[in-house]
Image: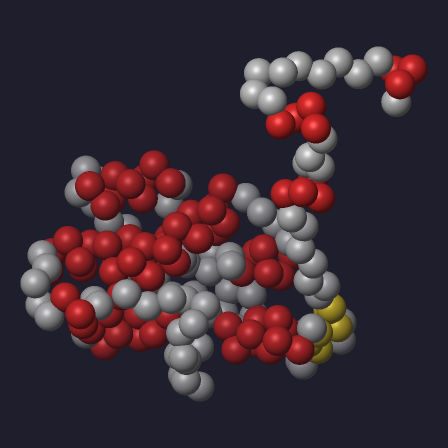
Length: 180
């Protein structure tokens, strides 16, 4: 999930770009971000990939099941686009159309940057993980506030209950104000 959504509930086009970057990284690595067994240094798939990128070992991200049978240039491009899309700052993420053009090689890739201090040291991915896992997190040194989160789910049936007349395709139902 995009950091701005986790922290403030802001769902924007740039949050969608972040999600695209995560999915792109899952595809190239063959790993699931939600099932990634992180370490203290690399909590998420994106953290792990960024660390490998910074060490110059970016091809270690590629799914080992491919056994080297892939276009290295395309794999590096895909990983870099995923990293650019998952920048913690929404302002530094490309638009979706820019991300597509980067993947196609139509426009030059923007530089992969890491800005862990964007939300302050207390809002690092470690803190965000604790925030999500424990339901609340208090910050130290930056503010005295405590944030809490509530998780809920809604099914399609909750939003759009099935009525017998909705089972027929192309049927139209007219509601009159007196019947509501």
